[in-house]
Figure 1 (cartoon, rainbow, N blue to C red):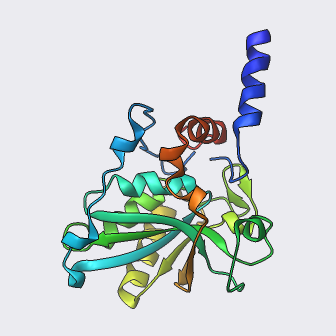
Figure 2 (cartoon, rainbow, N blue to C red; figure 1 turned 135 degrees about the vertical axis):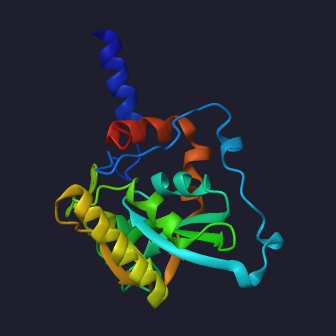
Length: 214
């Protein structure tokens, strides 16, 4: 009994307020704590032909939980946690998390299009969210935690809508994930970046408690 009490106490004290993450389409995010920094080896954008460098933006609830899945993809150059889809020109975490700016927590993925395509990024996106949750994502509730694909071209829009239709067919249910034209993306505060690497214990407790990997 005492051990259970202590475990609950540690859990409650360790969690920050980003959110609580199971994917309706299943997730394969690595849960290892062994040398977490080594698990995030990114390409240098200096080695990428500018003509092949592309950007994608996805919202899947807590942005801490969306960096890792994309970081693992060969060809991804960088991921940045941030805010998009709102009206405030200078959003802060405090205002966004309070739900008063209209923004969603999102991740910006910069990638080498000669090594990985947008369709692959979409597949990774779908297996790391709950596309049926209209109130947020997992334990994070509110429009700031909504799921969304923010396309940057008509080609991306077509791929995004096709992947959404495929997800709906597979699940046999209505998908609430929005497909919206990309607008300004604002990087989040520094302490949010690479959170799963810099705070591996708190991150794992948070992610496990949210049920993102069930």
